[in-house]
Length: 133
Image (tube, rainbow, N blue to C red; front, side, top):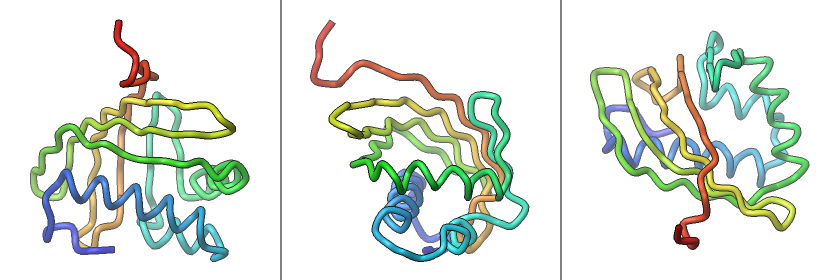
């Protein structure tokens, strides 16, 4: 991980999630080691009201590794305030021949070494950017 303070918040968020997912998908390393590389031991993520601690994050890696989705993150905006980042991004995922586009509103606190400590996320599925209304 690159230090938290050494990068633009848009780049930091994109690199954080892309690197972690790539490590999970393309490395045979124990998922707990990968989760610990990117998160503090007492991490708490709340996504759409669902609380995930370290153990739940590790368990969440099983379906990711099993399905091995293609992924891309498009960060639309991100703001930095001390050790906190607020961001809006779209996660583009292709899994089992199905395309998903998930808009994420992210509010997180990071340590100086770039590990996630706390996060709150709201998500919603959005139409493909290729389709017009």
